[in-house]
Amino acid sequence: MLDVFDIMIWVGAAMSLAGLFGLGWCIFRVLRAKRAKLSDDDLRKVLQGIVPINLGALMLSIFGLILVALGAYMG
Image 1 (cartoon, helix red, strand yellow):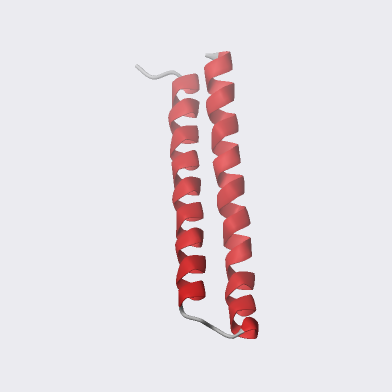
Image 2 (tube, one colour):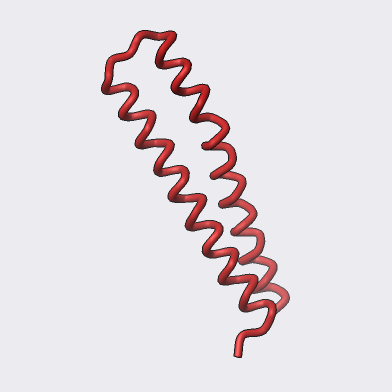
């Protein structure tokens, strides 16, 4: 049976994986915007919309790794 620390590890791993998928999505969006040969202003608007998502995905991934580390250390 899983104890609380095993659950912390699995939840943290899922959070990290979700954050990595979010980072990959941001990379895909930026590459697609660059290939579209947008003007500087349009490209800046696209990038300004992606930056908060990128930071959120990075933070989610970091919190997931913290949960994994705490679960492994305490368990």
